[in-house]
Length: 145
Image (tube, rainbow, N blue to C red; front, side, top):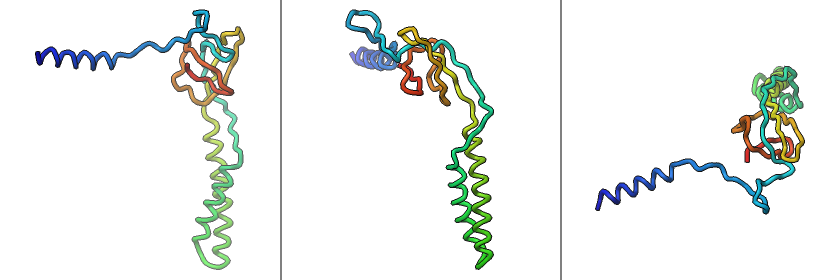
């Protein structure tokens, strides 16, 4: 009797671990659900955009941090000079850091939509997207359904 209970518990535990197929969505007529922004990933290309850009936020933040750090040095006119030098150096460093962060690779995701259109969406993260994946395009993002 104890073996049966243990075997039953183990079987239920294993069944709970089994992966289930992805959910399928159906329209009222029984066919597959179609939506204006739903489709299938045809292909994904990794693109490195050699152009880097900065919004100025990194420079401003760097200047503030550099100015605060420079202000902790020296006394009198030396403190003023250190504050200015720290703000300028921090601004330059902050701007370069922001440009380096914005120059990373992107993915161009080619999607064949259910209504026959084809779109290309450029995003920085790929996540679980793969060729043949069923997706929905929401604004400038592609998400797996």
